[in-house]
Length: 170
Length: 466
Figure 1 (cartoon, rainbow over the protein chains, first blue to last red):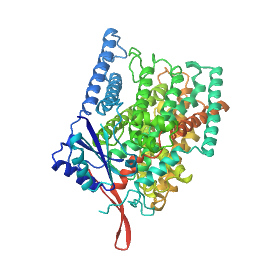
Figure 2 (figure 1 turned 45 degrees about the horizontal axis):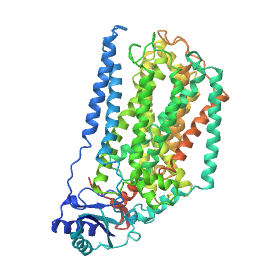
Figure 3 (figure 1 turned 90 degrees about the vertical axis):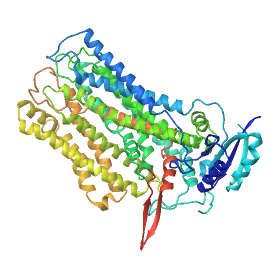
């Protein structure tokens, strides 16, 4: 049995939120449907949808790797060529701090970018259902369901006040 | 709630502005983005010609002499680099800072400020010749203690500038993804639409996508801020203070970083004003945004005056021969004219203008103050970087004499004009790849702002979701 994507367009965010509630009541899991918008709505606007992400882990890991590498680089070179300059200690913290700071930042930035790509599941060659009217302010509710559920889904979405409902093979 | 089609669902987000809808925002930005007008081509041509003249001037300067011993004649070149770093390097911070503090008035300014990140590419290229002009650190006081540090100072300075540029571009691209996807879908089907579609076609605006988009912007924005202050400090110490024997000042690097924050606001104000003056986006950039940002500019201008005075007072009371010579060189004798222009344009003019609410509460008032601080910052880089590059004996114990001023020659003038035109050219090219208005942020603003009547007048009511 093939999986279908059903997309309903709403002119009003309230009706889209009601469609989400109706899908919940009909036993659809939160992961089976999603809201498509042209601007970020505040969290919880369409009903609470808790989904975990690991984006914050990436900068921390990157920063740690960058910091460690920079400390090894600066301390390693200083200890390998121990020349006392101006009575300063071999491992002088102020200049080391600059390099460790740069290393930490570079690691954090690169890993954040990697994290964004990872969390967004890029690259994705698969073309997903969409309607260009969402760019004009319509709210889309997209439901991934089995073929035998399509009629039920379309009925729920229409009853919630959909302006238009269409389907596509997922 | 009425079930109106989006084209009729309009809200007023400015007391004096007209009602806006999501569709109107999409259409207005899309129309402007895809239009390549004759005026736009003319501006590109002029900027291109002046930039080319600047490149020729740099080549001629190379022929004149290039190396550590000839660095005095590259003083204005280095000042131009510092100016690009202070202005365009700092400008993306406006979007970062006010997005973090969740201001609504920042929405029209966000992309104008983020787009300055592309000028970072020019700053990076501009920096490369400077690597060959900075004298070795043996025998002089530097931040790096000894030349034993691998790559110090040049490579770490280069990496610092490079990381800042990477972070800025990352921030810009991430911020622009939703708009790129929108323009790809609403576009004319031409080359730019197809390229935007290939880059951002994956974007559909799901809950999860908006969440990682927001988190990514927060993280990269925080890193940009952390990097920017460090880069400004590092460049100031390595390319100004460590070239002046006996100059020990903990306020000067911070003063340059502060000047960067101040000019960041100036860059955004001038950019927004030009957009409005050319008849575009008048409804999307309301006067209220100029009014709000002018208060921050006033505060930073006062802070500029405080930093300058705090730096001066230590040397003024110290009165050692070196301290007196530093003051004479950078402020009161050799470079008195650039200093006075810097002082007036970075502090007095914005302060005197913006202390008046009717001036703040306008479009032109904050713009004049913004333009003033940009020009002031230019003279700040001239009075700092040109004399620092002109000092011959940098290994002596202290600045024994007050050096004569280095007056710009024709090549210097063309190098400066070329640098400015190059920055403008890159920016102008970028606005046809990434829209100059942050569509998704302006539309988000439509959710949280309404003009509502209260008794005999009408006021802007703001929603703060978190």
